Image 1 (cartoon, helix red, strand yellow):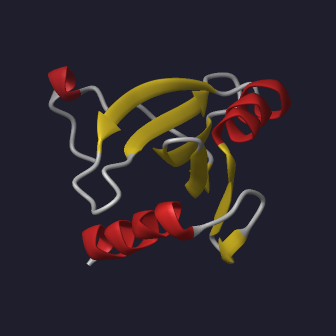
Image 2: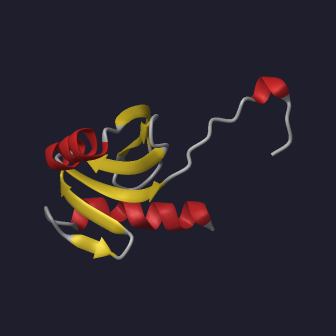
Length: 101
């Protein structure tokens, strides 16, 4: 179900205009604006990058701030990006320890 909702959200990337709020959970703007805001205002940096299997063929980036443990997921298509998820208390799972979650 999460995958379906994520894909539906990403499809909006190709149909939104800069500065438009698509839903209560997603904000879209020029890619440059969103990336600069994440860097300057939230001190987040991109740590993961991948192509999404969606109709828009968007690129997903995962941003984080290692000091505050905040994170942001961004979907990008051409010159438009949408913030599709934000959160806090990011923890990296160390699978080498084989510790149960």
